[in-house]
Image 1: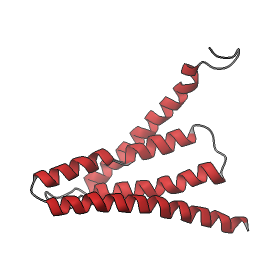
Image 2 (image 1 turned 135 degrees about the vertical axis):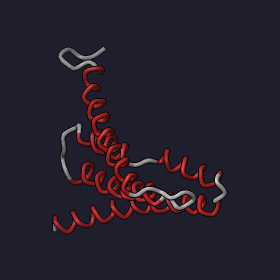
Image 3 (image 1 turned 90 degrees about the vertical axis):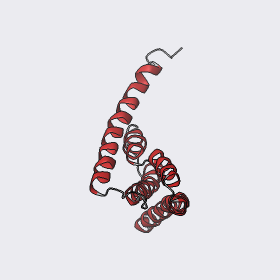
Length: 142
């Protein structure tokens, strides 16, 4: 039951679902285009997927610091860009498929280097971007 005059849960969530969907389309298109420009060769290290995930994680780190600690933004910015665009752009499902394909095709060393390298690089990217964003804005405020 909602309070009189308050939007129903359905009305309150519809704009969020819409912006996540729109952002997801945009992020997925950017990822798809990147894969076309930078295709992986059979048995080789999937550099495009690796780069997409690391760049996406860096952007997530900077973005979340901006919208949670520094800026006041519209309530739909975070679901549109953070969940939609960056969720559509990053592709950890392809990361898992790439790993499985490399192992299945007889490239276990490349597969495990990709598995560990992506995890370490993605975590480092989030941390470095968040830290750099905090430091950049701390200097501007002093």
